[in-house]
Amino acid sequence: MSRRGKLLTFFLGLVVVCVVFVVARATVLKPTSTIKLAQIPAGEYDPAVWGKFYPLEYRSYQKNLEMSPSPTGYGGSQKVQHAIKEPEILINFKGMAFSKDYAEDRGHPYTVTDLRETKRVTPKSPGACMTCKTANLIDIYKDMGWSYAKTPLSDLFPKMKHPIVCANCHDPATMDLRVINPAFIEAMQGRGIDVKKASREEMRSYVCGQCHVEYYFEPETSRVIFPWDKGLHPEQIYAYYAEKPGGFVQDWLHPDSQAKMLKAQHPDFETWSNGIHGKAGVTCADCHMPYMREKGQKYTSHWVTSPMRHVEASCRPCHDQNPEWLFERVKTTQDNVWQLQHTAGMTVARAHEVIGKAGAQANVNRSGLEKARELVRKAQWYWDMVAAENSMGFHNPAQVLNILGQSIDLSHQAISTANRAAKTNF
Ligand code: HEC
Ligand code: HEC
Ligand code: HEC
Ligand code: HEC
Image (tube, rainbow, N blue to C red):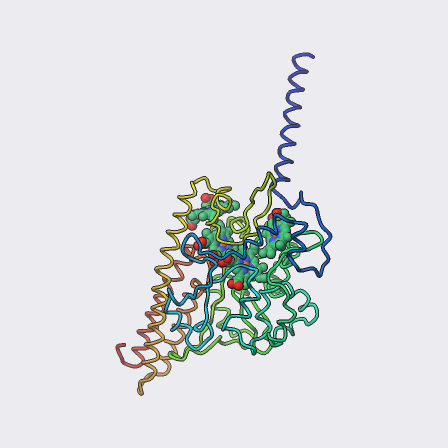
């Protein structure tokens, strides 16, 4: 072969090697494209049956049953009452169920057990409560439409055979990611997003956004609604509620301040979406369901837990700082947020107390008192949008610290407004 011929062969060879490498990497990076599809029927929800075909995913899913504290000291999967560390909860949620029972969340396989056991749920609770707890929602919604939401929860318990399982996130025929919660699908439609057209990357967060969000039950129907029409920021959601959607005014009336209160529910998706990772397109699954390897096989971890248990797998694909440094960053953010969250919660509690005392004065100016109540409603909303969120601020440190600062300011305004209305100095 001539020298030119040899050179040409060499370069052609190099191109072939490169192409093979790129294709191989792409397939390895996307385990879904390499798995062998099983024939799982549409009504099969038992994860053990799915597990026969997808053993690596199933074995890691089973780890959700383990209960241990989180390495950061925040979150974790043991059923610890929040009020032990945050006694302000007992005052701020006085008059409603969260002051009776507010335990740390735990793994997905426990949802139905925990729903049965929590003191927040009574036989009178609406069926809407099971929306985010079970894959059997698929059939219940198919049979009953939204009318299930008003049906007493106790009537639906026999139909809840499984907690959150494979079928909540996967189409059994294709194993593609899917969402099943009608409230999420409708709320996204309201924002002009058709989830059926979502990309694979988007689905890696949408599957979680089905449940890890703020919501309320529509009066009369108990239908589950996500309050997203004005946007996902705490201020936009507050403005949404201010318009009394569908006649929804309040979750409960605070017995001390007589303020019309809102209860925030775990807005992980909203908080993340406004943060640096959400904006950069880093998905929930990137951190909470990272890729793992076993005997050369790459798979998605289905142990949906604190990413700080496996910083290497969760963070290091994108960050080249060492794991200790990354851990320290998370912990520093959380310690800062925790301190301000506690201060904000205590200041809200004091505002309820002062408004209560001011309201008991005979000569109190009624419209001034009403202003103070509106201020404490907003102060508590801001505090709760952080306190009820699950990452102790990590999902969006800048927004969370800003919102807590505003909460503290609003509580102080509530206190001085109430004192002015009653000419007191509590
Ligand atoms: C909370 C949602 C959720 C649940 C529940 C869930 N998965 Fe997944 N699963 C995912 C995500 C996210 C991926 C990554 C998909 C992607 O990137 O395309 C995935 C990927 C997979 C894949 C593709 C191969 C891989 O490892 O990436 C298989 C197979 C799979 N899951 C099986 C299961 C089985 C079996 C169960 C029940 C035991 C289950 N999944 C439960 C979210 C879930
Ligand atoms: C069908 C609703 C639903 C879906 C879908 C869902 N979650 Fe959850 N998740 C819950 C509920 C409810 C709990 C609390 C369970 C309990 O305490 O019994 C929970 C708990 C958790 C926990 C705490 C686990 C522990 O051990 O403390 C994490 C982390 C979590 N979810 C992350 C995710 C991520 C990430 C996704 C998407 C890949 C996701 N979840 C999808 C409803 C859901
Ligand atoms: C950039 C990485 C990252 C992304 C993206 C991310 N999280 Fe997290 N998440 C964390 C970290 C770090 C914590 C704090 C864990 C700890 O304190 O141990 C956390 C905590 C949580 C917890 C509480 C876990 C517990 O132990 O109780 C839940 C639930 C959760 N995230 C859900 C979500 C959801 C839902 C999304 C997407 C909307 C998401 N996360 C996106 C990193 C991430
Ligand atoms: C898929 C890629 C990806 C993953 C996974 C990821 N990050 Fe990031 N992270 C980013 C990007 C992109 C930014 C934006 C700044 C930049 O470009 O460096 C960022 C920023 C950060 C910042 C700076 C935040 C700020 O507010 O300025 C911290 C801290 C951080 N990440 C920690 C983590 C930790 C801890 C984990 C694992 C739990 C993690 N990240 C996982 C891509 C990722």
